[in-house]
Image 1 (cartoon, helix red, strand yellow):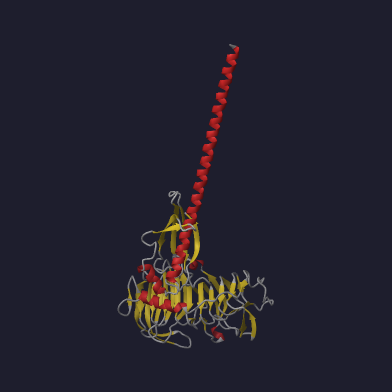
Image 2: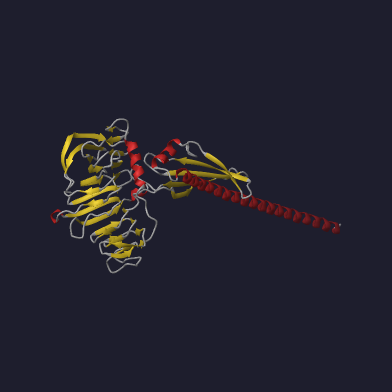
Length: 463
């Protein structure tokens, strides 16, 4: 009897051990299985991410092929009536492995540029056929870089004398002679050039202070360094955009200014505009002006008041004198005579100021020829604007020493085809020149401001 009891106890013990072993084995198998499933799920999530990223790359390729070499008007037409992929309804495409087998899909949704903007928002969602619920979504912002991304962009040699302090990037297609203080980088498209001011060949960017010709970091001049040569900028790109701006501003007839559009023909010698902080502007025809000082001599008719149009374009088919204040509006004022061979200019006598310094308030001034500070300008002049002189220059003429001025401050950006200048080596002009880049222009340039030819990605995020 005792022997049988021992056998029964051993059997029970064996059953317990076997049961525990089975429990442990099953648990281990379930753990291994769950880990395999988890690994496969993570692998699928990574594949979904790569598929979503492939959708972004496809759309960048698609935009490049649809917009490369096209004018601003053609690009606008593409977005508004060209049925671009992903606008209005999602665009789906299959993603294949290297052997050509489909393993998933991406779906692209696109927010096209708004009125006067170049910013495109692209959202791409990717998933695999095996795990269709393990989706990943990427969103990017694409934009065509505007001409307002430098505080100074010059097509020719440019010189900044002592008394000039610059906050913003500088770029010239020719050389840069800089004797002021540059708080940001200074660039040139040439490795060397002949400086006519000193009658000598110099590096692309240089200063006459301390013989810092080859130093990357001039201790007192180039506070953020300099770089040259880099690719140049084509000023001819601006010409086509002037035509687009006229098209956007003009309806049937001649002078028209409504809540939607604003165009004035080439009557008289141009127009004088005074901007008002309440969102309106006054305008009057200029009958004559003094060619030596660029001051208005006589007006024709009376002042009229209009609201700044919704599309943000005021197009003058002739010269335009601009002054005043702007607040909470985004507008571009163009002086360009596209109906004759006489090129038009923008003239400034009195300050132009913003009411708020954010992206809700921005002014663009575009001249077919010059943006000229007239002889009788304010002793302390402030210009809050992004400025382009398409075929001429941004600057002030050489006047008598008695027309010497104190300080000019530009808050915005300057693009000058010919050599810029607010002061001269004979001591005339503005004694102090302060140039501040408006950072809001990087992503929010003035309406219909000229842009580069390619869409660049400047924001990436996973949603």
